[in-house]
Image 1: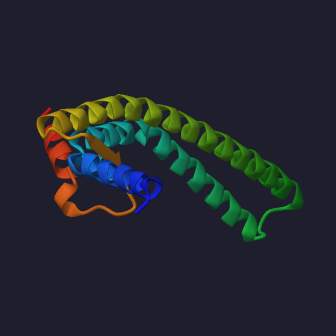
Image 2 (image 1 turned 30 degrees about the horizontal axis):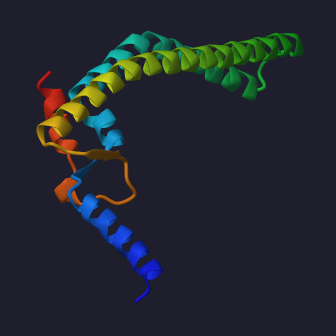
Length: 161
């Protein structure tokens, strides 16, 4: 066999043997962000923080529905009907504006909470990886063998804090 054909084979075999010693694990970040104790606490905190605004939105919605039902009955004189229609349009605009503002505020607060959580998650992953002497941790792979999944260990570590 020619030397030019042997060298690529040797390089391939040496890369396989180098990789064979590499310890790889995987972690499901989405699951951690859903189930980790700090993530659950952050979600509850946001729900509590935004509950008054949600209730106010429901109040606006109920007012709009009541006004629409009144208009649908056709019992109003024309002048009153026009006033109520303008009131409904204004109420709908206020509702949509408030809904946009609440969604923007909620997204901002969620991003703030998740930024802090992400740091804790990354620290927990590094801690587990170092304890198990892992070389590589892959986040959210297409396929994961449960034998190399460290998600439960990371969740346990986050629960202890």
